[in-house]
Image 1 (tube, rainbow, N blue to C red):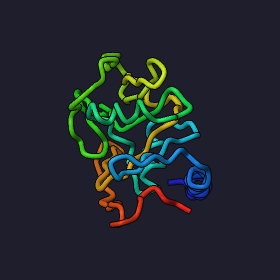
Image 2: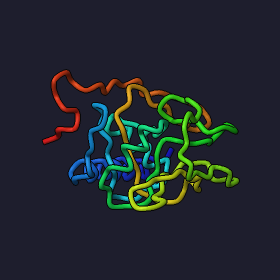
Image 3: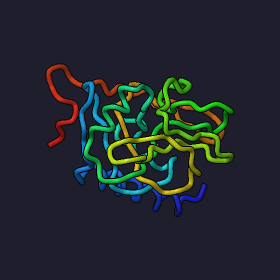
Image 4: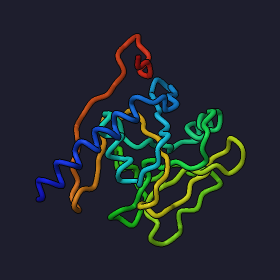
Length: 176
């Protein structure tokens, strides 16, 4: 452990989280849950860390309804990291709950070798598909509220165990 390097890393992570919180990231509320669309590009792991720093997780898009809602949103970019991955297992799972894929849109391709992170990509105007991509690439990303989020760290799992359920009677997306 290098104290000098660690001392520089922590303030930069705080700056990244502050940057994301201070800029309008396109907060969208669906089904009572906020989705945050980033305007900065990060690799998949850093995107997950940033989401967790906001008590969120990389978003699950695991039902037809999720993709129908996504197709109606006015977002400005064509590619986003989300919570699907296969880092240390042969099958694709969501980082928020370790569930296998339940639904994939017709426009999907998760068969590329050594591409272990899920990427939402625009197929046509307002239609999204899913591809596998190299996790080290920098892309924008989508965070969502999550009661539980798992992350692979040094080949082990840990959970933050946080609870981010919205308060009754208030929109969970209202941050002023």
